[in-house]
Image 1 (spheres, rainbow, N blue to C red):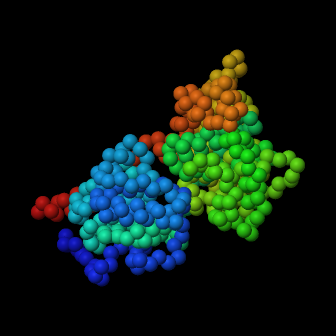
Image 2 (tube, helix red, strand yellow):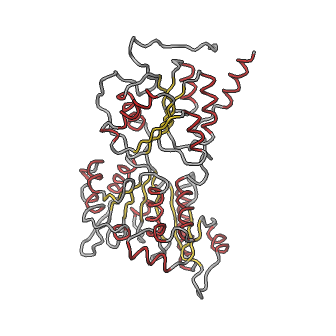
Image 3 (cartoon, rainbow, N blue to C red):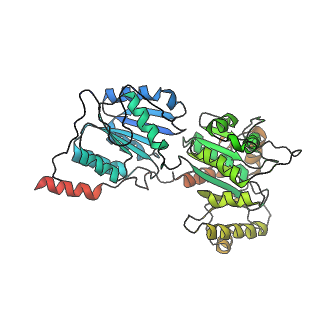
Length: 433
């Protein structure tokens, strides 16, 4: 194919949409609601910004957090050089093929791998569309566009039969009871939601002694127990009703915290619950109890990431070593679990050094959190997070580091969503001949 753009002529007055989001203007059939995701748009024209704003007010966008700015791809590149990219990034460009590709090469350097990129262009060019899709762009839409087409296109990114789940599951497990795994899970979930601006659901699986409700100062009589008791009715609507909303971006699936009832957790039911949640929210924090049952083993082995919390003592060392060895054997193609050494440097207490801990287990601690009775005790008694009580404490710094690490936010732009460099060089050489 030569450099002349191959075009498909749309009917008069009908915007042309490439990809699976195409639909009839002015009509919208059965379109799924957009999950609890963050969407950011960088437009070049007021017309596109207005259309996006109108789409953001559609009922199907009610769970999504949408931010619309002007500046196009250049502004997006500058913005995300200092911040992590959202779940969906929409950029508009009025440039021709080579100019747009050059802009996107720069954007690719700061774009997280998990981000879905939608490009709105003003060039009806099949070669450009094929190039963008091949290199990882989720959708290319030709302006002008309607609000309904935007709704359908964004919804289609998550409702296709082969679409990957929206969210990732992070399982937090303690090497033994009392090591602070639940506190760590709750604080990391809070940081991801309140500071890193991702929607989060924390699922407390300790039905008898769960502390999620207490730590967030929430009183809920429904939650995970009700979901486990209704395997035939499990869907997004039921889970949504059972969630306790803590803030705009953080929700809890609380445990009853009752010891006068016998609870049974079935593997299949729990898997369905977590699967429903991860299809509607980007981050799912699973707070694992200190039990070893078939469902607990399955949850750990199937999680996207596992965080093991231990204290620098012999019992934690033994149990953490067993957990790491099991997970490495069961998940040979996954990343190693994250290891957190909590409550380190307790005065006058003999401890196993971090280096000896790492040498025995075979993995280095991702974070070491020092003992801080005042900060942790105050946060627990007040139903607050560590970052709220002591934002400059070593514990808060460690939890922030872990939150960025597990969520992939430690180095914005370290993973590229698309790589247009080689093709751009070819096109540039062609243009200079």
